[in-house]
Image (cartoon, rainbow, N blue to C red):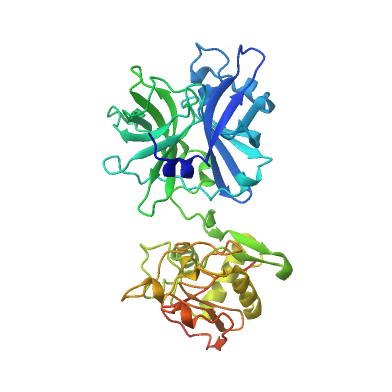
Length: 412
């Protein structure tokens, strides 16, 4: 069976779906998986056949118009049958696939605390295990670790997973299985969603599922999902906009992370600038460094022109105030990238490598020094030891100054 430590990670994304309709002798029960895009956007992904009105009907015969008129008859709960959220609207369906996506509303407090989701398309069937967690009927909770067995080598079926059932999972058929997410674990022990389970094989020894990346690639909704991308930004046409946290007492929105190489690349392509020396363009999740104040200001002006919002560098005192609020009282090494993390060779790491602080901001301080609006460098870097951490230190530099420890973060 799926080890409890895995269950505890995956089940917070998993929900029980009950669909009631006047033509049904009893309610349809299935599973779904929640996807958090940002603090304002959540989706529920599930199998279409959870909403069929007759047992002999296949998923492609589900009446979408009837479903749209009965969204209030869908209840979504957790393992304790506590309401998790409500359906807002149906946002994706396709006659070719056993898949539906709903936007959701009226979220519970726990649902709002979900980590931002990533749909991962770089999974390796030969090296990775696959996990799922569904919701129970009388036969118990379907959950487990599966092996990817592949599918027939046909172009039209490349979106299909064929997964062998773990021999330790009891029972020949698990109710509540359909619509549960397929997850893989990466090298950082993070669980990434890659697909949705839809049906059993004829002998019930195999499960079948849909590759979400393949299915959604041609859909407009694909633009919303963080498909193998950073979970700290929003991908737009021609630029990347940072996700921010609003600090009410200072009346500013602070970017969750420093500007990354990935974000800066769009700026360079649009303005004929060059990536500064020392930045590896294959390491796109690392902060952009070796940036002088002039280029940081130019980036803010460019992003402002793209978004029609007012982006700028933070005022030094406001940066201090935010950083001091963001730092926890103890266990600093869990939150701040510093020289203490390395035995010999301090190095820049991806944004968000450490935990976010009290304000849900990453690398503030730590990983890189950051420019402020007054040409004052704030914070600390991967080359600073925690014992030398000084949030309120003010060092002024010429606007053309740059180094390999220095980047910037924007505020709105």
